[in-house]
Image (cartoon, rainbow over all chains, first blue to last red; front, side):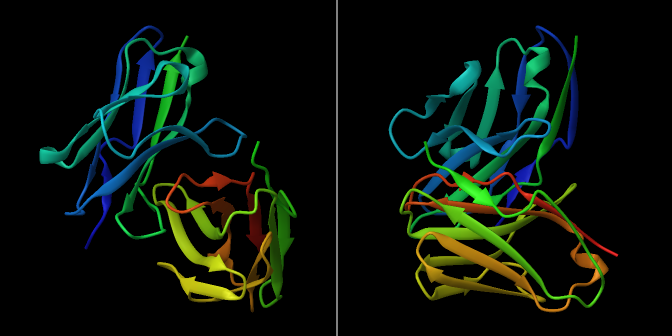
Amino acid sequence: AQSVSQHNHHVILSEAASLELGCNYSYGGTVNLFWYVQYPGQHLQLLLKYFSGDPLVKGIKGFEAEFIKSKFSFNLRKPSVQWSDTAEYFCAVNPEYGNKLVFGAGTILRVKS
Amino acid sequence: DVKVTQSSRYLVKRTGEKVFLECVQDMDHENMFWYRQDPGLGLRLIYFSYDVKMKEKGDIPEGYSVSREKKERFSLILESASTNQTSMYLCASSLFPYEQYFGPGTRLTVT
């Protein structure tokens, strides 16, 4: 079945550590890719998105993600995390010509101060 | 700024009750969606609508129905609530094929 996989369900980091959250999808055609974030007690909001062009995309709050087509991956990165990055992160894929998003299971990130 | 509002943040209902969850968006988006969010399962699509009076089943439509009589409003209906429908319900809207904008969620508890 077509799906989106996030490899780590829980990640714990110390402040200033580097972050990489994995996301792989199984759709074969063109896709639009998204990372959403949900801070404690807040609604889901868009962190960054990829539609086409430069496979390295930059989002809000210093986050970036790299689309590697050959690996069907869209990993999220941040060079130095802060305590305020504690949140749940969701990868989502919109297969071409579809108007639905398929979400991964989410990764809960806890940053220790 | 796009605003998606949901009628309740918290709701407690009894088994067998009919439950209505309302969602309103103010950006004239064609698409509206209902998801449920459960720990470890991410967001799962229940139903979506791409136009007034149009709807399509998502991945987990059983036990739910929807109504979209006006473009800005999308309602989720639990015909006969059951305990396994206790969850966080999220509404979203979008202009295809762009990103979805989410409401704050309704945490529904069915006892």
